[in-house]
Amino acid sequence: MRSRNRISKISLFLTILILFGILQYINFQSSPEKVIPEGAGETVWINTIIKIIVAMGVIGLFLITIAIHRKFTKREGFHDLPDYQVTKYSQIQHISEPTDVERLIERFSPLQITVHAVTGLSILTLYVTGIPLLYPEHLGWITDLIELSKNMFLHRLAGLGLLSAAIYYLIYSLLQITYVNKDFTKNIIPTLNDIKGAISDVLIILGKTATKYQSNKFNWLEKVDIWSVALFDGLIMCVTGIIIWAPWLFSSFIPNSYILSINVLHGGFAILSLCGILLHFYVVHLTPHRFPMDFSMFTGTVPLQEAEEEYPLWVKDISGDKS
Amino acid sequence: MIERIGTYIIFISLLTFVLVETNILTTGIIITIGLNVAMLLVVAQILAMLFGLTRSLRIFNKMEHSPLYSPVREGLIYSQKEDQEHV
Image 1 (cartoon, each protein chain N blue to C red):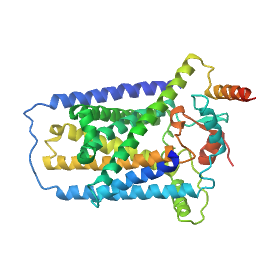
Image 2: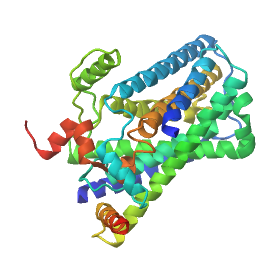
Image 3: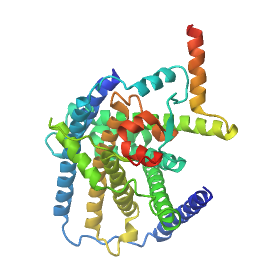
Image 4: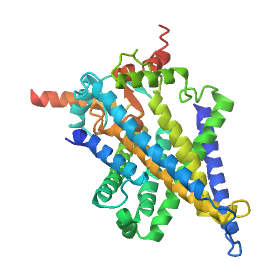
């Protein structure tokens, strides 16, 4: 416990240091005499490829959402609430805390809750302030309401929030793996079992019989969710965001036309990311057995009965059941 | 009610992005409604996130002040009180 606290403090200190360094570097380099070089080749084909990838990605996410909905509706008693959820609902009506008379087990640590909250709020603020710039004809009222300068300030502030969460969790994970627990990330590494799970779900959606997928702490869809946020939002969006925030920093090795392509990439992947988050919204809020929302990400706990149904391998693992 | 129409709201907003990004339909009232619905869902998520965070902070605060505090036990006490009132 003490080493965990120490690592989280070191990670926080390093994150602040890195962020301060980035901001200082941007500030030092923002001299007006630095001019971005013009042209250096047409990049229309790059923009076309990006648009094709985004279009295919959006279609894919739309189909995945339909498929997941089909899978959920095929579940026995989909529209009926499970017993543990009925208990929780009846209590929510009377008290303000998410409780359950069933046994609860810890699924998320306070650190994960914090990182999720910072990342989530940052990403959602980025959507509200960024997506209207891509569709000014339809969503221009949002930018007008906030005012463009304040809108961009909020966008960059939220971007720094996302960047800080990404850097912090990366440093924390690396320190944990190096000094405390080598298996720190084992729960989120994709395995053969996850591929089997995905195939099993596809078979169920197609109406064929399949063996029931035994999930570990995170099922295959949750792992896809985690890695897509880490790669798309944490890496690609942050890197492209910094480039279009301060293009003069990269002017010596990235020509202007490519910076414009990076702008297209940033916008396109933002739409992809939003579609992914809408799918996440459907899974954690709007499925009947989770409606109105799944509180486990905020309380850190999950009812044992739910865990036994959804993540049987994880429950066996933590209970020491070898069967 | 919401959980029944919510799924279709998600589908509508995703379909709007499909139409816009594939250049099938880029203007018109349908696209405006779809995109605004998507932004409404984002705002709903922000509110849900703040709501959930307030709860977790309240639980954390209670646990800090009283190490014996347990949301599970509090839930039991409340449900027993409710049962007694009904009786």
